Length: 280
Image (cartoon, rainbow, N blue to C red; front, side, top):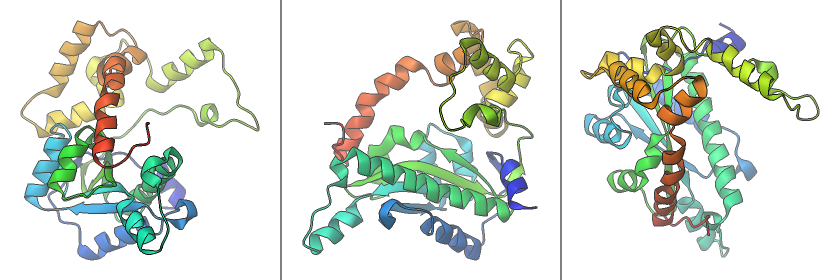
């Protein structure tokens, strides 16, 4: 498979075989993460490799019980790491203040995601599947304590990796010409925007199970790997919230707008606990 086809056929995998990833492949995954683009080549990231049963169990608790984190043979916790840089600069008679700089933080987060995506692509090349899990950000304090993460280091993203037991056939995306703008930003009309998202997801009032397979694959995969039927719970929640369209599904149920905003305070406090004071 050429690189274009490999990247176009990539899907987030949440159902893994119980097969260990060979050490030589793991080493190469780490190497490509290390070789990713980095602003100023500062490399403000660290990766915690989690393969042990206890570590995976604890990590699963921190992300709300997502079973693929527990079942994947490998999870990599990608961290913004200013601890190492601060120690180096202090020993070099200078002072790095990245923990107080929004610009340094944003560049570091971009570096982190570049490194993680390098791993995703190489993993695909080896027949592995992967899934990003961002909800570690809701338990930063707990993760820092359990994984002995020092001050000035933030766990921001998990990448769970393994040999796929199943791969989703399809994931809806916007048409690529809607996200690419020639020379200047093209402002679409309200109707064009609504049509774009309707084209992405299809009709809302189709069979709910089929809709969830497209729009909420996590709950489908969770139901396969857990005694609880998450699909039934979501259907019940949809009925209670009177979900009638795609936007309501996303921002009333999956990512409730009010809850996401209220989470700011907790997340900012976790950043401060780690020595980051970028939201002064």
